[in-house]
Image (tube, helix red, strand yellow):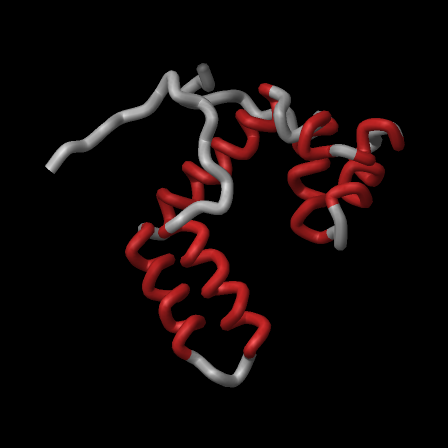
Length: 119
């Protein structure tokens, strides 16, 4: 289970990878810039993103973002992006994000933490 307030090591490879993902074109490039080997950089989703260190960093920044902006505000901006007609790439990406939230492509296989709501 993830800790509530983890201490983030800003010198760790996982932190560098997280930061590099924002500016690099690919995850592989981000992993290599963070100092991971080519073997790890080939499949960073498995080799890096599944580690506890990376999960703590990702959770920390998600919590920080949610402290600054609400889900409703994000949904409003996503809706504006969907309804605009000037940037079709942005519109298509916003539609893809919205559809994935409404009806995800991949079905979670973890049934340990499932909550069933009956109406």
